[in-house]
Image: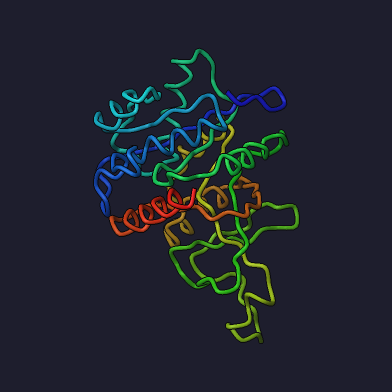
Length: 260
């Protein structure tokens, strides 16, 4: 349990078996451990209360098999946020109290840094924060235009204004090759935290026009008047979406072990 300023934050790791691009990926092995176990153990370095939320008995049993905690959730959920909301209610019944905030931890990032989870959790030191997420400055040489790397513009108080797969803002009268040296661009890191009462409200919202346009659910929250606090991280997360990604990560893991 992480107690900061008298409140309790729980970590929830949504994990499904039937991934379109990589079925069964939570149970793939990386260095002798399943991916979901690696995510769980990393999250547990920051938070005492960590649960995997899954719709598959195989994942549930794998988690409880290594001593972790898991809850079964509906297979009808459209997003990790929806799955977290159901899981938060079940966790409250199991633990005997409702967490003040929930951190949604991606189940396909086996090397997520505890420092990132701590950074996100610290956003809730401010009682006015409803939702929080992480951003990272885009560095020279990165593919700024890659639509698979959502960008975010933030206001002067560190709150998100808009998320886009396009490059935003557009720098008028500046060659595109110079944009990254003339303006600070931010990449969105998909780690979310929500006040528990806000999380319940988010899941009742219908899909919005900007969410549909960009296929980014956080725009639905902005369109409905919720504010998203951002925190700046220096680290890039390594996610696994495909078997090719897994092969790349295994090479990194093996190389790190050789250098250790």
